[in-house]
Length: 267
Image (cartoon, rainbow, N blue to C red):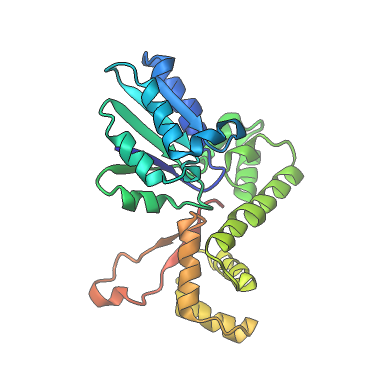
């Protein structure tokens, strides 16, 4: 089966696959030449984005009946990636792992395409316990830093709060939001930014598209409709920016229109 590594951008998907998992396989005795790894976003690997070039390369590396491990990073850059992965599935002694950027290729697309032949492995930001394994300071300082700046791995290595703020601001505005706007051809840019602010200020409260629509009309004076709001929320969920939580005590038709709670992937 195809293992699809999902998660918010910069959560460590590539590091999990190309460093942690590769080191684990080596410790289990897997030979280096039985691990075929291609980082497709690297310029020197651009030629492998061609369907037949990458298939010829990988199949040429499979020399015996032993187990092989195929790692493809940024698989959305592949031409006809569905066809490539389908062909790789026919190599019976190969185990396939892929990561994909949420900006151009949603993980759920490939899960749908390979239903019954694919598994999702979701990577979250680091927990507080993991954070404290590398944080230089006591648990009170660590907790203050974690609550304010979250658990994206790179923030732990930064020395100052100013560095963390600049990094997170650019990441959110220039990577997460820009990607969502470009992928989904969103024209109401101000509205999706306002929606994010509304959701962020309403964490833990019951809300739905109708309630948000009323907020837009009464406070912001926008004519955005609830169907557009629902679509924008789906885009945010698809990019792993937010997650929704359903009420457990609702049954049957009451699920329709029942307010939900929304939480951001990282604090």
